[in-house]
Image (tube, rainbow, N blue to C red):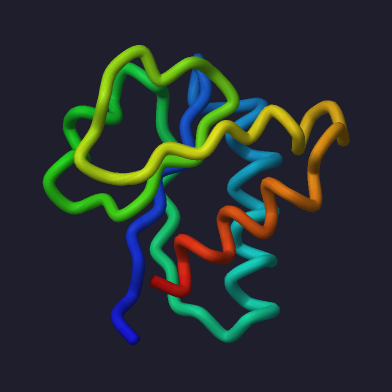
Amino acid sequence: MNKKVVLVACGTGIATSTVVSDAVGKIAAANKLQVEIIQCKMMEVPGYQERADLLVTTTIAGKNYPFPVINARAFLTGIGLDAVKEQILAELKK
């Protein structure tokens, strides 16, 4: 299976994206999946558009991208967290 490039973005690329980045890394490791996680600001996402396979974000994407976008606010609130983890895992396995 090829290594997936996962963008993890929030408004500043620092606080909430760090929480989500760590969680995505743990999901991948627990399932023996290879990922490259790029933590960034939402405004930087278009610059990675050509190489990304997935965007996991705690903010509103604001536009359509050529890869799936997963809303990750559940990592901050805890509401619906298991469903979001399953959604991320399903995308990583594709």
